[in-house]
Amino acid sequence: MARYTGSVCKLCRREGQKLFLKGSRCYTDKCAEARRSYVPGQHGQGRKKTSEYGLQLRAKQMTRRYYGVLESQFHRYYEMAAKKQGKTGEELLVLLERRLDNVVYRLGWAASRAEARQLVLHGHFTVNGRRVDIPSYLTSVGDTVSIRDKSRKSEKFKAILEASASQPVPKWLVANRDKFEGKILALPKREEIDLPVDETLIVELYSK
Image (cartoon, rainbow, N blue to C red; front, side):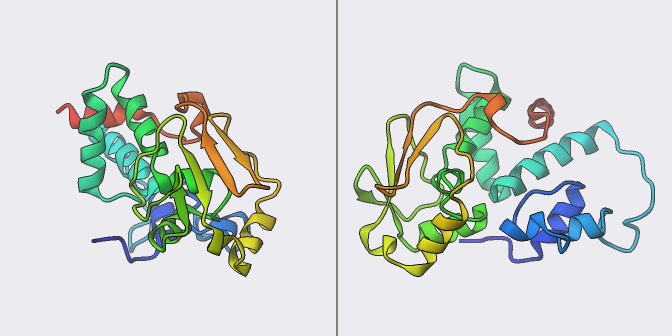
C-alpha cells in the first residue's frame, strides 16, 4: 500500500497550521511549524496572493493530510459523501472520523493518527470482538472497539493509557479504561470535529 514517507513536519508548515502529526512533539518548542512558520522551500518566505482555486486546494490538502489518507482514498470518500442526503462536506468529515485509526486516536489509545494507523495494522484492536487490522475500516454507531487481551499487557499500551488518562474523549464516543474498550454512541456532528477548515471549499473544488 502506498503511503507518504516524507517529513510530516513539512506538511504542517505547508498548510500553515499544526496538524498534530507527531503526537506530543507538536505541543513542545521542538515543533517545526512553531519554529519556522512559513512554507518550506526556497521561496517559502515570499509573499504570494492565493487564488480561489488555491484556497480550495489548500482546504482539500489540509483535510487529507490531517487524517493521513492518500488522494485516491480521499476522492473515494468524497464520492461516498456525495451520495448521502446531508451536506456533502459534513458527510465527508463524518466518514473520515469513522475510520478505525481515527477512532483509536480519538479514544486516546495513540499519540497521533499515524501511530494509531500502525497499531491497527499490527492487529492490536478488535471491533465487536473481531480482530480488525484495516485502518480505513469504517466503524458504525453501536460498534465496540477493544484493545486485544495480549496487547493490554504490553508496556507500550500501559504507557499510552497512562499518558492519555486526562485526554478528553469526544461526546460521540465513550471510553471504558477499566475494560480497555470504547463505543461509538453516535455519528459526530460538525461542531464536534476540531478541524479548522471550511469543507465547502472542498465541495467547490470537486464540483468543477
